[in-house]
Image (cartoon, rainbow, N blue to C red; front, side):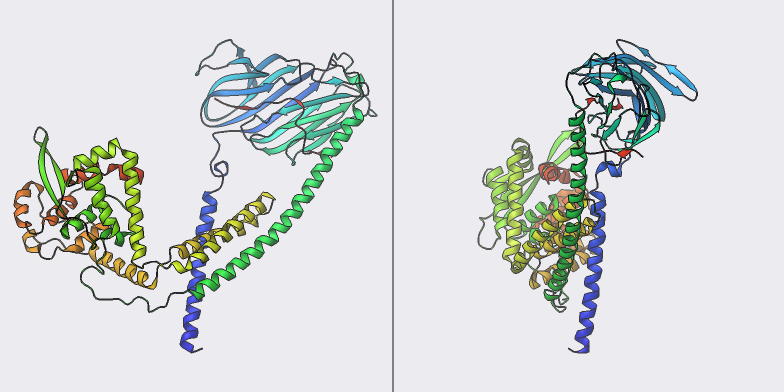
Length: 614
């Protein structure tokens, strides 16, 4: 290998690495953008603290006092608390207060309230729930509400044990909670009493026994749609006056249920960790393999440096069409593309544009136009040019002529058909570009391989993240890089296409500097087809000294080159009558184009419900 060749390969590898880094940066941006909205945006309403004090009474009722801190980031009329009556005998003695510093403000229960009311609350039953609506208009502030209520007959008295199985937070809750605490106080007993405490919900929850016969369930960062429930077994003597009695033994079966929950949790965690470890290894292995194949492919299929030879052309690089040139350079297809194609057909002698002024109001005129067929399409036209003539003249017009009013009326009355025809025209532009040999289809299979690899890697990466490892991001980023590279192989330009692309981009750059400042009469010969192609590429050259009110005079100047007049009229002012009529006609195109921890399982406790704002 010569020194020059070695230097060239090193330089290429450096550029390849630079491009890969750019791809990775793009991938990171896409991953960040794709994060769930709940991660990116601050919630309008959150609950920083939800503290529950629950006391079990001797008759099996549960007396509950809840202090809920609401953080309002927007305007709300108040908050609500939804309490489920599932597996209970109902709810009674509801009271609401607002805690302000050291003061508790009593809220009044009413039968009817409206938005804007304050210091009142409603308590309505709906299905098996009681919905408490607390009216307290709030915006950009924190408020603390205390809700008292009595859950009747929630504890069950079996032959061998008493059971309190209650859901303090239901899966219906839609408001994220920063900290959630439940203090459960049992009736007084002795230290030797047989008491078992279990909790179900998020696996980061804990159970503590800080005081005698008082147990605390605590969990942080509780997402929406998540329940928290406690289950306590205690001596039947704690609820001697309970009416919720079941004459059977349940202690041992409940213990076995909870052991099964905990065993399943351990097994699930072990299985999750094992699968996560395997997925991590597979992610790194496939990502590394993909990187090797990618670099190998880029090196092997690198375009030769001498493919594009700059040429000192003065006109257009090639006689294709404005639409094909636009497709090759990635120009967005819009009204400019259509009008450039019509002008090019006028230049070739297939069409003619005529105009007339229409009175639309006092002193106001609208420039209408008519497109007329001069000769039938033939083998000298590309397929998208033939289709454009058929679409405008045969489908919309009368076979010989079509006006801007015809196009506008057709697009409004048959919008779906009009949009479908436009899509067919775009497809034929692409087919003509392929037919001219601009694209290298020999690498399509490689593109398919890269795309399938990207799909597999993305799936493995997401699965790895779901199993608790951020290593999955490596797989997702690799998948994005491979998918981007697959597009390169799907739409890879041939050497000829790449050469023409570079020429057209140079032409576009030159036309942006094209000077139209001389008087129109002196520039007639130099305003050639380059202007039409530039328009198709999105380069609009506005002429100086052009006054549409002198259109009759310009018609004489451009009598031998009629398309030039309509070009000048179209580009001179976006707000002139002719440009507006074009936009109106093709508007449809624009619009289309110390005790223990929580366990999994459960969910069978009484109660439930959630909280939120309104």
